[in-house]
Image (spheres, rainbow, N blue to C red):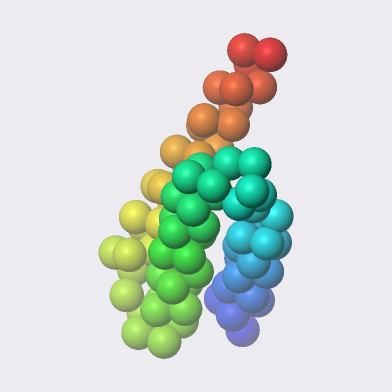
Length: 77
């Protein structure tokens, strides 16, 4: 139950990130981020269905890279 609650929250956050992308102002960046978010979404679903953790670890690493990039942008402004 705890696992599914965390997965549900994660999927909601990923959905929010996907729908907030601006494909008109920055189509290439938006498309790339959408693909990363979609990969993460699929990995969360896979771990719930198959308990396959390797893909989830890769998804977490990808999101950490995005977070680091945002932090880097924030520190330079």
